[in-house]
Length: 315
Ligand SMILES: NC(=O)c1ccc[n+]([C@@H]2O[C@H](COP(=O)([O-])OP(=O)(O)OC[C@H]3O[C@@H](n4cnc5c(N)ncnc54)[C@H](O)[C@@H]3O)[C@@H](O)[C@H]2O)c1
Image 1 (tube, rainbow, N blue to C red):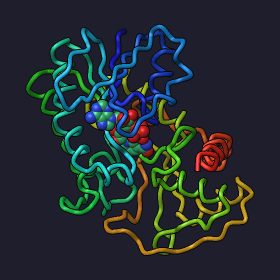
Image 2 (cartoon, rainbow, N blue to C red; image 1 turned 180 degrees about the horizontal axis):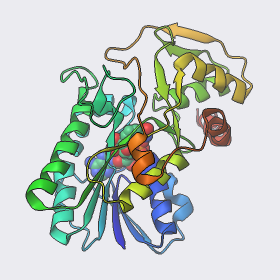
Image 3 (cartoon, rainbow, N blue to C red; image 1 turned 135 degrees about the vertical axis):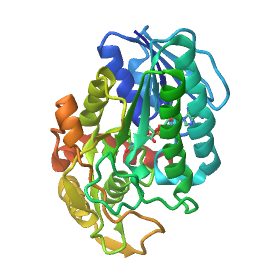
């Protein structure tokens, strides 16, 4: 197939490109490098089936005939989407329409990268796909949460009104090599602080929970869902729940760091609990994650050590 990946120079997009190339497809990446990096795809530069296009998808664009559109473009980390709030809303709304139009024009299938943030600060735990969420529409996180909820509504509308063949994945917190060092996500924050010998910052009392999915598991889920016939949203994430404090302690163990833990006030609208119910993915796709948190942190250690060393050398 000839496949379009928007946001392909980002963390998840770059792994998705690898997986699609490995499946034998040709891949066009559309990315404006707002939060992505060419370095994420540098190891694929010899690959003649990969084409990288500098494109801001909030403007209409035409990649030529494609068979599948994977729409991953959007700032994703809290640091990024709070700095680029308007761009996040634009790529979720205008950008999503433009991608859906490409799929409609060429009769391509469409795969949306949505998020567990659609559930907001959930009142149901763990979160099933049937839960409609608990989101503050005007809070600081709303630029991302509401943009992603809109992407789902637009995707469902193109299916309903224009017969576009769609898939929606609700991605839960994913980590691994190529996570940006300064993106404010839990794993990158802790790894960076531990490797620099700084205090690990825990917001609130650290008893709020998160689930962490290693990137290879997450991508396996995407590929399986892309081949399935399921059109309603599917959670892909690791259901093993950790408190933020437990995660901090594991990072200290894996890095061998002597850093201490420092407590700071909880940011507004920070979810207290987040855990996917993956019954649907298990039954429908035969998918479940294989990599535990400690193993995943060990697999990421080398990358974070190099990233910290590069930052130190550049400063
Ligand atoms: N990483 C996670 O844990 C996670 C969790 C839930 C959902 N997601 C979703 O997965 C997708 C990818 O996330 P990520 O972690 O790889 O983030 P990322 O920031 O690393 O990648 C996003 C990519 O989109 C590109 N982009 C942004 N705006 C664009 C525009 N207007 N035109 C073209 N390209 C644009 C960026 O340059 C970047 O390469 C996002 O849609 C995000 O909402 C990720």
